[in-house]
Structure formats: structure tokens, C-alpha cells
Image 1: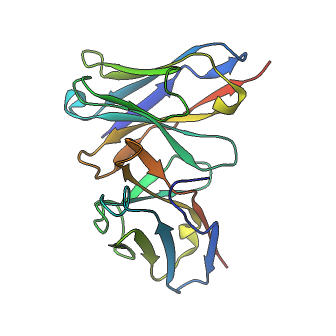
Image 2: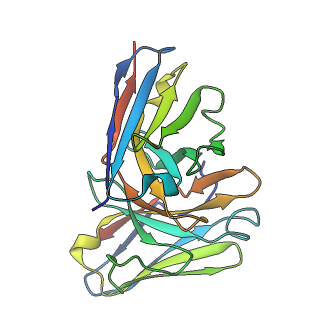
Length: 110
Length: 119
């Protein structure tokens, strides 16, 4: 059971916009910024979004993040087949004194 | 370019030990904290341990506290994870990752090293 809750799966068709949610509590998302990671099949994870809504230089602007209260969201617009991957949210938890990950969301491009 | 290369994984019996290494290059290693994150087969990511840039502060997941020890040698640009009293549930790919600082994410990851705990 992960500290952060994500839907196990999501799907969309090419060109569509999809969102993935990440729910936590006051000790983690409620008081810290959220980062998102993309893990393509058979590869190491890659930083996708940091500090709630910032994109590293290598990430296209089709990817965006937001945070409100104890929840965060990742949005992917103009969905492409190469976006098919697992997506994880993560943050620091003040109560656990640990970094915590969501359980991951498997995105399927139909 | 930034590179992180893990090594030291393998097959070990329950109760055994392994020392994982992560050799870093392409950035000023002594200026950044480093993490170990693991992924059991078919499951999600689990953060394992963190060490501050100068080694003064270390944090561990409850699941490994007292069994695993993170350390670093800034003269060798290498971070280590000493894993003791290994259990079947420690079977996973272990990744090292560079910290951006201030909970702004882990911006570079290695390719991982596989640890299998089995008799």
C-alpha cells in the first residue's frame, strides 16, 4: 500500500488529453512539492515534472503538472504512442522523514 | 553528460549481504545528495535511502532501517549501499539517482543493478 494514491491505469487515444491524479495527505503533498517520473518499458525512470509544475529541459510542453491541497495531477496533451509508460508521483513526507512514491499509473495509448 | 553506473548486484541467500556501488560522472558529485531507489519485479518504485552531499545526513525507508547503510566517497565519485540481513522481499532492481536539491526531484538515474535474494 503506497503512501501516495494513484489510479493503477489510464488510457487515451492519440491526440487526446489525459490526466493522472495523485492523492496524499497533509504531511506529504499538503506541505511539500510534488515531482513526477516517467518509466518507459524496460528502462530506468526519468524525471518528468519537478516542484509541482516545472519541466526539465528534455521534457516537451505537452506534459504539465499541478497541485492543490493534498492532491496533484499530471496532464498529457496531444497524446502520442511513445507516451505509453508508467507514471509515478513522489514527494517528501514530513511524518515519515522519507521520500514517498505513488503506486504508479500505467498509461496505455489505444 | 551525467552518468550513473551501478554495480554489485547478484544472487544472494537469505541473511546474506551485498555492497552495491554507483559510480558518477559528468557533474560535481561532492555538491549533490544521492539516493537509492528500488523496484521489485512487476511492482512500483520504492525509495530506499538518501545521503547528503557531504555524507553528514542520511535517511532510510523503514523497510531497510537497521539493515542497509548508505555511504559515499567523494574522492571516488561513488555512492554505496551496504545491504545486510537480506530477505526475499529485498529482491529488486536497485537504482541510484542524483538529487536536484530541496525536494525538487531525482534528475538523473542509473540503469540499475539486480539483486535476487533466494536460497
